[in-house]
Figure 1 (cartoon, rainbow, N blue to C red):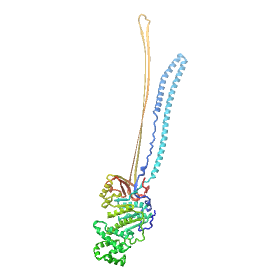
Figure 2: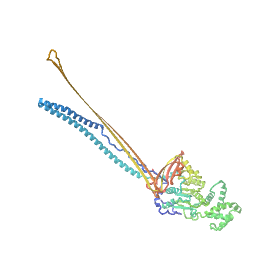
Figure 3: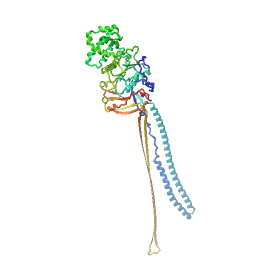
Figure 4: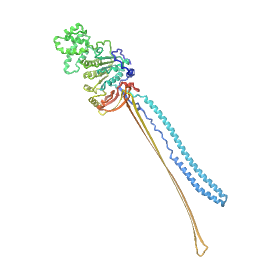
Length: 634
């Protein structure tokens, strides 16, 4: 990406030896403004194979009953033919002696008939058994074909799902939203705020200029500035107070704007009691500006104040004529005595700032402008520089001729006056500029601005601050958070258990009853009456035979199937790449205190008063992982 600006200023030193190649981070500059990254497990998109596994169909009971009945009939026919046919043949053979060959022929015919009956029943049983076996083979063939076809479709479905899952990203961008004109981010460490600024700032530079006011004294804008230079973005770094001579926070301001900025910085508290002092200081500086003409700088103002107080000035900021005119003609002696306290205060506060902007000539603003405080012990001049930086950005936005840039203000431990921040917010709203404020704490004046726009929370170490954030979110609100750790080493345990059970019970009941009976009887009666030669006799015989055969068959089939799938993952610590971990929280102060270093909770208030919480990770190192998209996940 190439910016329309070509001038550059101070550059931060390169990273330490052995650090990752900066080129890997250039994807952070791809289009689309991002606040962080959201995670989605691609495996959750996998669709299981919808078709159930085919099962073997049992042979119809009719085939089994037919074959069984045919076998029983064959056995019964053999038994009956053997008994009855054997008796008939034996009878014919006995009669052969008396009746001749005709009985022998009948005996042979009876034997043939018996054999035909037995063979016929045997063929019937064989045919029924063959039909049963053929039906079983047919069903088994159909099952094998259906199972192989089902398995092939399942394999194709799994391959398609693998390709589908591999084609989806695991990490996506968390967009700022089209109407997110104001974002207040509370909490976090210096490293996490630096990571957020890198992710957010790099994506913002793709679409508009960016001004970063870094008041943390930790130079959290250093990473963003270094990456922007690598991406051919014109970067203007202004370090205060160590390199205040190269700063442009007072460049381009008219004399009246410079006076107003200095007075606002001197009287930062803005109390009603200091209103008269502010008015007096404004009058003194405006009179000085009138005497100095068009060339008004902090150095010339400081020299003019010393001239008013009658102090010896060996600088070359003023000419002898200007010094004499200011000392003799600007203010009367009586008024000088009344103004002495104000003159002394203004001169003391301006003296450390006289080099401000002295070496700025010829250097224009960058597409990325970073105004950062060095790490120095607290002093009045440092606090004035912080207030001047905010005042300078406010006035620059108010008179900016082009589309207003996006503004990020990273507050330090000392903070700035609320009214200065409100002035900046008002100008940004009027110009349609996006304003992002990073608050290290949620206390004092920060509590008054919470809810003015979109709100973000990072780790809040103080319990009271965490309690305020929990009340704002709503107690017992649940959210799922995915974070990236600066670690390597992942253990994934997956167990898949599938149990398929089937049972078949089959019962056959065969009952056969044979009842045979015979009776023979004879009686002789002799009468010794008048005729001795008369006699009487009777003979009776009888027989009965019955046979009962019954068959009953019952078959029961039952199948049960159960599948259990368990996956667990854990991450161990090292110093290399990282992996994601998943947490589910209920909003309580202790949970907000235990957030991971780069975890971010973005809170949007809805018109009905409810909140929508989006969890993200603002670690810029996520861009180094695989399957990371710079666009929001669908």
